[in-house]
Image 1 (tube, rainbow, N blue to C red):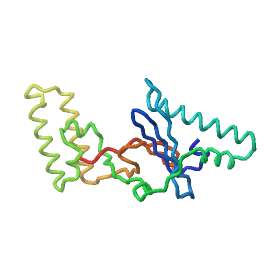
Image 2 (tube, rainbow, N blue to C red):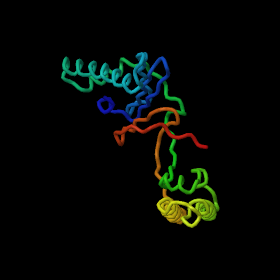
Image 3 (cartoon, rainbow, N blue to C red):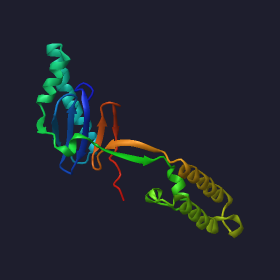
Image 4 (cartoon, rainbow, N blue to C red):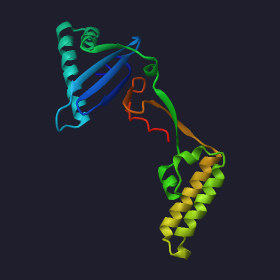
Length: 192
């Protein structure tokens, strides 16, 4: 459906009472908002599918009647509430997510916030030493756990020497549809 509407981006979010799908088509400076009541006992994704099916049925009915896809898209857009784009919605927030393996942070008992430190190498070495004192086989630790800690240590030092990030757009409280890549992105994690 979103591809048929030539969607630049869309967001999906919900409350206990309603689900909302906001669509911003390419070339149009408005938000087209679709809202539907939640069905008791159903998951938000099920309600979204129900809404998408309703919009899809309207699109197909108009396309069958006129044999014109642009008229079918116009019909579906006419079903929406139109809103002016506020400055906060014009561009989804861009975040940089470190490419560090999450398990490396877990094995060294480090937080993602530590990755921004200027003394990251020193923090990694200190975290490694703390974990070795607990998990080394000579002090009663398991050899497999110790190997994983050592592997995490090497992985983190490599990353500290050449940090790489994934750039990602999105909103902190909404699912985001990226029309250029034709995929949904989960809500962005809140910065700590």
